[in-house]
Image (cartoon, rainbow, N blue to C red; front, side, top):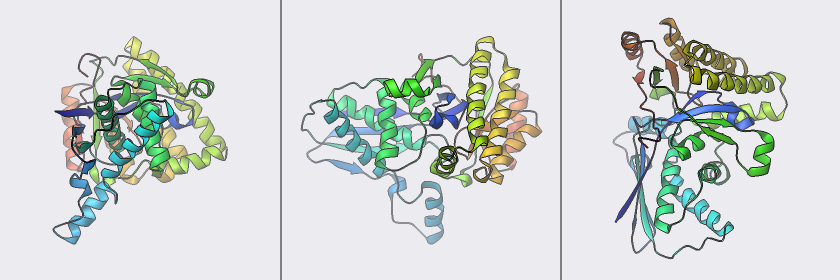
Length: 338
């Protein structure tokens, strides 16, 4: 019997990147793309390489291209780190594991290193497969924390919590990373919510912008730790924008949401100017040029925005296409289709 588990890319609608700094965000996962982990019992413990783990290339240019897309370390490290932290989690909670071995393999269609939480999707799917194999259950808040610990503690990847929360809950979530609540319970205040179907969202990305989230977070973390006033003020405003959008979603006040998306991106440019590349700015500017509001979905390489109708969507798609930018209507995962 093969255990198959999936996780999906995350798009931050509002509030990012304040999630790593006791802020607030709203995010969802969408199943246009996915990461899948397969796990099955075998005599020995084994990890099967995927495309991004290969070290044999047809030529030097292809090697350079793949390193640009996937980095130097591939995905096997994500599986190994997931298993290690899973075992440590079980030891910490006095959960006894059986001694049967397994083989684990993964595949993913999530565009890599574009702020869509592709790495944490692989880790989330891995932990879910391990839960089923060992017949244990981890709560959603703890699952999000465990996935984050794989990245931050085990692999040294600077990251915020929101990706893992959205992927653990598998529905749109409002997240308040209140400092006191985090200190007492170890996780934030998470509220599942509904994103209305008539809110016309798009996600657009370009693969030549691939870079890890650590590029953004390592620099922002330094400024935060050093108490840079503009950064502290921006984090408070990102949190406020999240509250405004949460209320606007209930009222279907889409004009307010559009304004908040634009402001979210303006703030990013104001306090993280060195990590917002010209090509990232260009994607947002192209959307703005046709009257659409947009912001980065994560660390960079992908944007989320609002279009007005199908004609508007086709205009945006054509403009993006002429600039080597892919565009999709995200199919949001909800409680009914997870």
